Image 1 (cartoon, each protein chain N blue to C red):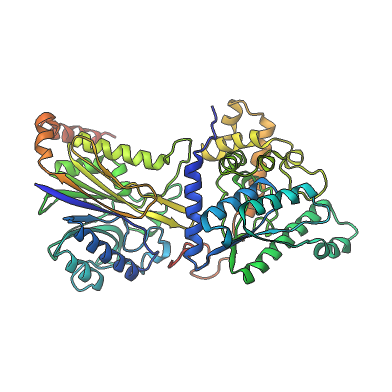
Image 2: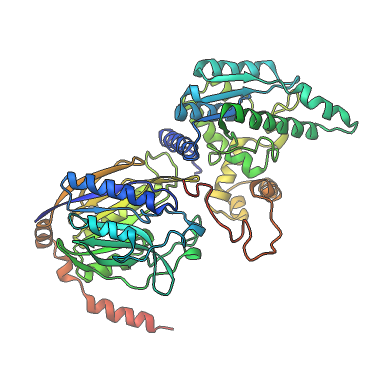
Length: 273
Length: 283
């Protein structure tokens, strides 16, 4: 049996300790993040508040004109419940000129433009707020590459990046994220009616079980098929993982010298802290 | 004879030996105030764990003229110490090492033998392998030191036991991993089971100091322990918290446990040698 159940107290303890330590050791006290009204950014927000206190957390709502109003309201409810600092920066006027500049604009390109604009807003606000940008990516979307490179994937820390989506739900429920946020269909809200699972063609519950075998338990793809997973599904997921690996690594540097960043110039980010 | 052992469950500043030395000296003083006879620090306590290219800059020559060892030797006049550091030998090879200091002398240096170089670990890339394991005499009797992966291989605690060590001193910088439904991480449970097993199987004391804190995304879980020769837990430091825990152990327990359970008396070393020679001779 594939069991993705986690001890939520332990997860909370390790992650809040991580946020606090990794922020403080580089001289910061505060964190900010985009809060969409979805579960991932909600969990990241709640954990940041637990680690740093509400006064040290800035939740930024960055709606586009097509963003659903109820999701924005959910974000506001959580902001009010937690008592964190907040601001709303509508990105429509910033992204529409670029989106409208090209006749052949696609939904995908427009979505990427929005994700990258949100990144720009957050990194800009990080300066006056004197905080670090907190990531909201989970393990499932990182492995599948279901994100915009240099957009929603850009952050100083990734507190929930080792939790599968189903584990995100479990931890979110345990630490008091509103049930409405947990239950709503996951969506990047890039256009009306978009849902992750609709776009991906499978459910997070199914893909998490498969990823757990492939990644955590080191099953070979054919062994996953033996365990009862559909062959085409296994191949598709393997393909997504491989094809999107570039989103998980730094861009390779053409090696010329005796010592090159990334190959033989190796230090943790926490060097000297 | 009763002695008090202190387990210094600390985090270290990555690559900053001077800052870590200052912290060691503070903790040594605190341990002394609590009446400890011996204080054990985690693996690479003077440097931090995931050093990568910092290793060579944080390396020390363990002798009286080295300012870091000079300060530690001075402190060892009052209390015995086991500290973790990067050891640069006279041929400029770099080892993960533990030093035992007592009464202004370095009694023993152990260079880590098993360097995990798999999965999340990359020690073999940056460090040389130690190639000997020896028990040594202290004012509390004969002891043996091992570092982390060393005691994931049963042969090394076994050899120290045969070499006369009644107290095994283990240090580690064990990254936490394996989040399940259990309130403790898989790595933490595994190490504790192993240490308990060594104590029980060897009718020995086993003291283990593990690091806490974070290095990038790695967490270090602490949970330092002492087990007695019956395999019973003497003390356990909390998971994840930086803490100095002190506990008394009664060395007379060795007499009582081994009178009841003469595993050491009955151990067939010659048989082990014979069978090992046969196994090694097999093609």
